[in-house]
Image (tube, rainbow, N blue to C red; front, side, top):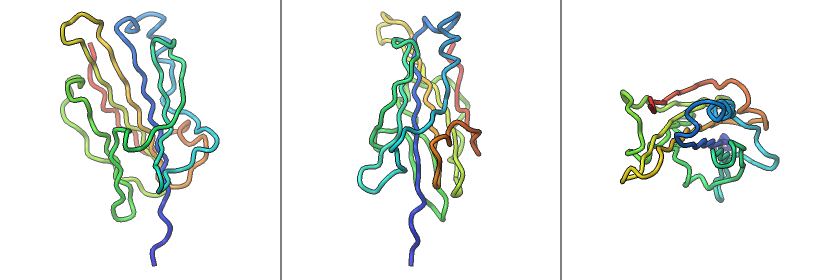
Length: 168
């Protein structure tokens, strides 16, 4: 007889900015933004019906004020797969044209129940015609395998994968 599935909790934090926030006070505000947030009341681990992730969007145009929400897991760029009692975690890299140079992708992280990972990826974009400023994203995926408390992502992760490349 198979036991109950180990719960999975996903938080996706996206910080976005333009060249205007590459230095000075705006950059200081951007750099002060947390990469992990408390889970809102009522956010349960992923359910079998419609798996949801806790999202936090932080935009330069909103003075780097976090805006929380939820997204269906299918719309979050991360692959999750249960294999041999572990959770295999590997963020998808999309869009590829937005990647800054980096050597190569690290392997997937395999979490045991009770562990969590923080995985960070950054992106850099320019307009096709060069008419708009450069824009940037930092995606942070906080993913826990097992029961959690609301403050789980405020602590130190068991694994931290920093996949950020230079954005010039």
